[in-house]
Length: 168
Image (cartoon, rainbow, N blue to C red; front, side):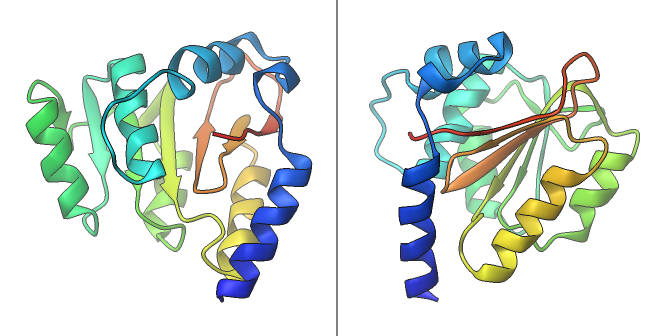
């Protein structure tokens, strides 16, 4: 499993870009003003992306899957005004791809056009990488951002289907 992740990272480096390879104004702004912003906290890359995204998008309602209790506690402590579990969700966090609730949320009434869905562990195994590819291909998913450590999907009806691989 460790070898798969290593070689997946090498492939990612060869196919990913920085903000200069982004042609979508929405994603360019997200990358330059959020993902590449300075952050003093030392945490995992996925958790840092989550905290930066909360500061950038300022969600009022979020969903964090039940297996991520430590993430939920930290977010609630740092952002006490955010309502957790009340839909429609502005931001959704999943600690892994193998969650059947992800499909239900993306295809159901609990998200809106500006909802951001952050998923941890895209390349933890070959099976998770295959699942990530399937998620990107869902009809409702119009924008996906592969950050290797995690992935972000948006269901933006006003944007053409695009996939980005961004180095952070």
